[in-house]
Amino acid sequence: MSNPVDELAKYNVRPEAKKITTEVVVGDILESSVSPLTSSMDVYEATTLLTKKGLTGLAVVDDDRNIIGFYSTRSSLKLIYNEVYNRWPRSIVRDHMIEDTHEVDIKTSLNDLIERYINAYFHTYPVTENGKYVGYVVLERVIKHLLKNK
Image (cartoon, rainbow, N blue to C red):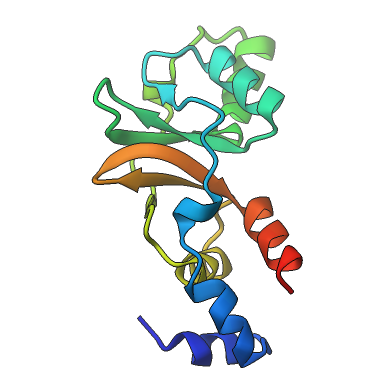
């Protein structure tokens, strides 16, 4: 991975800000208030949960809390539209989740997480500890942390 100070300089961030982002880890800002999805969950049920909680997606886990996929509201838009207006049969999360989950470890530095957000189009990252799902981190939480510590 590249030098954190060089990466911050690329975005016109003061070098002293390095302390804020390298000493904090994902575990300090993760959220776990919403349970992950299951692969057998109905698409409507999963989408309703996401929208009620203001989330754009969540990890899909097996019985041992291993992440097996990721399901997002973006995935559900076409499905629900077709189910409602074109009378497609209802479906389950397993059939529409993506398997490339882009999870982050609970010990990942905030700086590395920010680099991921800058370089990829993801809003929510599943968080693991020892390979097991423990929660998620959302972009707004990272931004709030940075603003609080500016």
